Image (cartoon, rainbow, N blue to C red; front, side, top):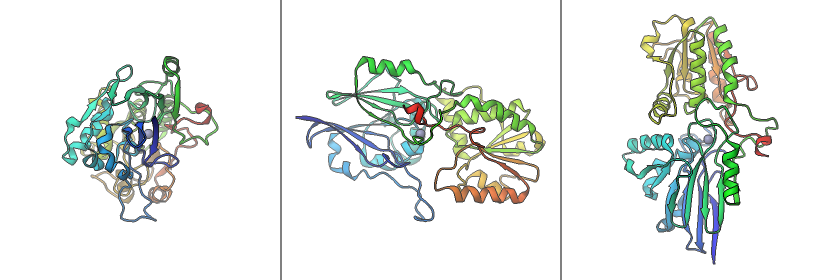
Amino acid sequence: MNRLIYLPLGGAGEIGMNAYVYGYGPKGKERLILVDVGVAFPDMDTSPGVDLILPDVSWLHDKLDRLEAIFITHAHEDHIGALAHLWPQLGKKVYARRFTATIGRLKFEEAGLPVDQIVTVEPRPATVDVGPFKVQFVPVSHSIPESSALVIDTPAGRIFHSADFKIDHTPVVGEGWDDARIADIVAERPVKAMTCDSTNVLSTHEGRSESTLAEPLTELIRSRSGMVVATTFGSNVARLKTLAEAARAADRTICVLGRSMKRMIAAAEEAAVLSGFPRTVTPEEALDVPRRNLMILATGSQGERRAASAQLSRGKYLGLEMKEGDTFLFSSKTIPGNERDVLRVWNAFSEMGVQVIDDQNGKYHVSGHANRPDLE
Ligand SMILES: [Zn+2]
């Protein structure tokens, strides 16, 4: 008697650390796939000295001969962050779309792991055949390029694994949400089970498109007389593009501060999901640009101490310095648990006479997740 199993190794019901096992076969002999290998970031107050929390893959240890493959839905750290840490224990082929695979290979390179174990997959109808599973990547809109839901076909029926998504028909970077694409999947074969992103299930208004931000951001940046520094998630390539284009429209030269952000832009360009990103200058070159014509994109939207934003809040960073009359913009949302770090940065800037502006209820930030009405 064959059965279908689903086991979250971390992730369902909490934010961070997504890792899910699907299995099909006779009890105790199911063939398995692993979907996502994310990390969670620890609370510095309750677990000081801990850098990352990894999913518990010990359940898989005596079942590795039954593990067929690993699939990564998108390149957010809570979906891919533990891959290079745990891959040596797992040792199976990793399938992902181009942008995600590019990020994965960078991580493998850094860790000295074989990059050829990461296989680039085209979206549906391309199909990865492993054991009893046929897996397709379905493009969805989210706050990072080439996010995918998975269609997982098994002899027991079709599973739709939504991963993270929002309903955005005009997402600035990448494919928009496509109702017909989803209707097709259901029409082709009924969906027996669906696992769904519920990050924003408590938000009761409809989600908004990334493209709604261009105008208010341009207006804001144009209205400032000093230097403007904006932060957001480095992986939110669409937002970086929106911010950079707003800066250009406001006659400002752009400088990117922070390694992870530069890396994401480079990876997005390499994977051909980002084009037309305005030319940027180095921090050194930025020193010669008048403050009112300069816009800096900086890492550290969560107040991370070592990121560029926090460095600027403590004084000079790579020769650049914030001054009275400058503006600092959080084009992001603070993840619960990071409030204190964000506030520390905020206060430090305020003391310098820098005006700090946050998302202001969605004027300067939209979420990457579907809200309740979208889920319905
Ligand atoms: Zn995500």
